[in-house]
Amino acid sequence: MAPGGPARSTRPGPQRRPRSEQAAAAVRRPLPAPAPQPVSRFPNPRLTGLGSGLFCGAVMLLLGYLDSLLFDSLALYSVLFLPVCALTALWVREGDLLTAPVVVPIAFAVGLLPVAGDGGGISGHLMGLVTGLATEAGWLYGGTLIAGLLVIVRRVRLVARRTAARRRQG
Image (tube, rainbow, N blue to C red; front, side, top):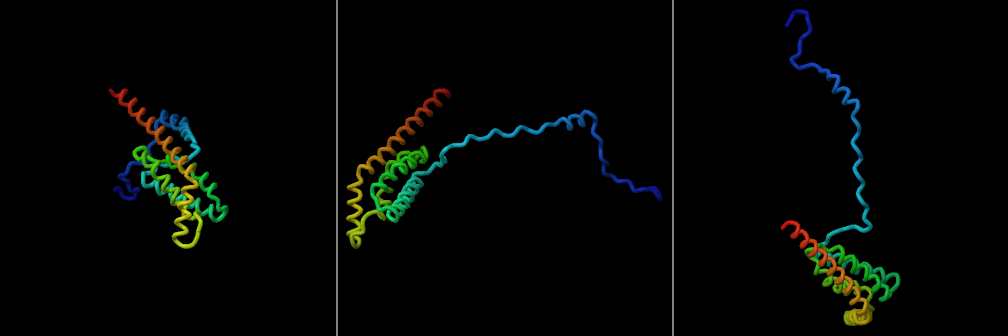
């Protein structure tokens, strides 16, 4: 160190950019905004076989309680069963497609518990459940048919996609 002089640092000082880099930095443009994702009308969850059974059963039980509190109408409960069947068949995973037509009738019976008439004790409630299943059998079959048809269409499309993919590879 020189006596009386400023101490020198071993770190390099600020460096100036050459003119071409300065011009390039001044011309930088912002990146374009990412393209907006298409908005789907319905959520697209993929439920497992157990998940689809729990979804359908819980929704039908909730609809059964709401119907018994507000309207006490088996016909309304049965009509509301049809969209639940369609959603269950559309939201089940491709690997578990065959579970949808199985779980919808079970869910119908589970949801029918609060709607069925309370005729006095367990035997009266059981009789109301059996009567409800017998009188609403058309709706029950219709909902199961909707779920079955949607599952068949989805399965045919899945097999066609797999076949087309194999043809492209081979």
